[in-house]
Image (cartoon, rainbow, N blue to C red):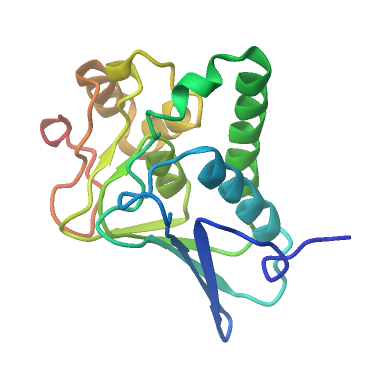
Length: 192
C-alpha cells in the first residue's frame, strides 16, 4: 500500500492541509526546542517519504512550533546510539531523509521561526526556499561536540553559501548565517 501524507501517523510533526498547501510543523511534545530524538528522526523519514508521493498539494510550508525550528540532536538519545546496529539503522534513515526531501517534487518553503541546528539545519537548508524570522539562526555544531556531520549539512552548506564561507563556518564550528531577517548570507564576517 502506498502511504500518502494523509495516511502517516506522526507523533512529532503536524500536517495540515488548506486547499493545495500543506503546512508541516515540527512540534515535538516532549521538547520545547523540537530536539531530534528517535521519534522525530523517524517521523521526518516518514514525512519526506510520504511527501514524495503527494499528488494534490502544490506547495509545502515547513516550520517549527514554539521558539525553535529544531534545536538539533537530543543529547540524552546519543548514548543509545553506541550500539553498532542502532547506529547503522540511524545512518541509513538519515540518508533516506536527505534523499527523500530532495526527491519531493512540490516546492518546500521553510518558514524558519527560530534556531535550526544539526539535522534541523540540514532539513531547513534542503528546502527550495528559506524565509527566516529575525529570531532564526542556522548552526551545525557537529565538530564542536566531536561528531562527524552525517546528515547532509557538510554537502549542502558549500552549495548555499559558497566554499569559502562554508570553510570558515566549519573552522569556527558554528554558523549564525543571517545578515538580516529573511535572508541567508554568504558573508564570512557574519558566520561565527
